[in-house]
Image 1: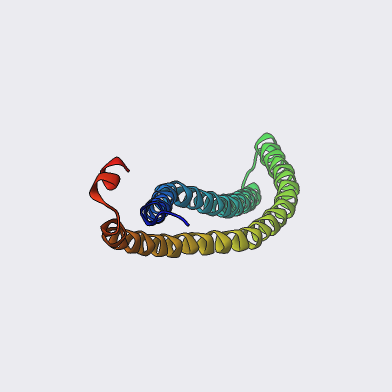
Image 2: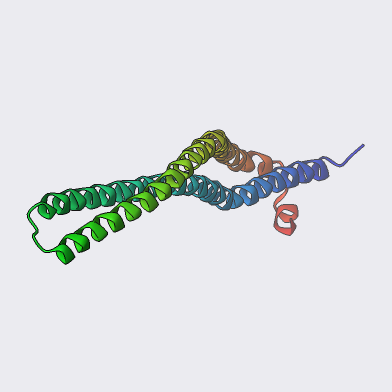
Length: 180
């Protein structure tokens, strides 16, 4: 049969070890939570970068469209002015500039077609990124909430063990307790 003092000491030791283990685990939670927050922030940044790429391409398209409009207006004005010009060399210079503007417009329109294709690719990539990251962000949020709940339950358990300690120590003689 086991000595009652030894049994009481073992019970106290078990409670103390359990409390220390919980306190150690509790001390690790902030790092785990920070890692989850960093993961969530990285996913948000990926989403934002994908959307920013789409916006940047849309701005480039608008710039190309604006250039085409400006060159078209300039060509139209030159055509209107060419009717008033009386010198052949001035007329030919205007016609050359109109032709040059048409070439520039053609080049910009080709660039524009490529940009529209690229925009569609970027939109698809942004949507895929959003969809993939939505699940990951939801999982991160759930994991974070689980850690918060775990933290609360561990704190309650630690408080319970601390409040039970006087009861456990009362059954142990002082000389054994001081050695422990």
